[in-house]
Image (cartoon, rainbow, N blue to C red):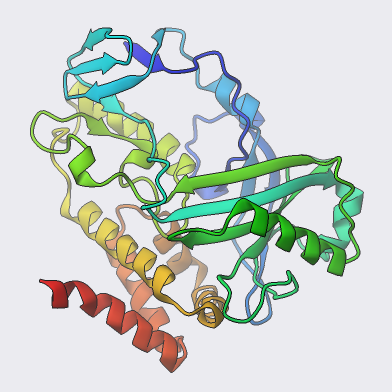
Length: 351
């Protein structure tokens, strides 16, 4: 087995989080840095999510993904087919199967998620957490944004026993909010809550596409590679989450190559259906007026946690995903229902 990586010796630094029930059983406990048994959201009021959320220890995760039996090559792939990879320096690697896990493109033409965060000591963060295990989403408007501006929320999670990440996040936008805007909003929000950043805190900057590259830029037809991770349907386009789904799907991918599962070219209809529904969720998020966004999530987090799980994590649960969307629709304000109906109908008008 051969792995091609532009920077094979680079230490990973991003913060990776997941719902605990998404993680595969083979992942060691040491890969989990902190656990929030019942994270909170603030939409129209404070709500508790009865589902354990965790932050991964990035270095421990990287270490756990051993490459003992893999020959690792340094290089950048520029042309990828189902049996051959060509790198930027002209190296050609032939293989029986090729997996394309290069992630999404850094393109402003694609919907993106952006975030700006600082890391503070746990004691300083306690007033911000307000007794919650974590803030999965805090949509309160004390971040200085004006009415009609693209909204952003506070994401606050413990990185370990001593440190907390406080991050202002634009869930999705085309274009997404600039990092400078998010920095200003975060500082405004924290100052409003009596936490003054010193300027010496560690900083996290986030920008990535929540959509895979256009099909025209991918070899998705006959003879193309197997897409994996955020380059595939494992990326949730309405939330940007893909790490846990990718970890949990690794064994299935290996079994397919070993011949113990479906053909690698097949795509079960339920997975295709879930992706279509998730893409509808992305278009809905992009079409909502700013004031509707917290109301949208108020309705979502009013659903039973089983339906929340189906929509957020069930990449092959077509029935659960559809049920969550249908249950949620009548609870939304009329203006949001009209916006969603227009989103659903728009492709039909173009067809």
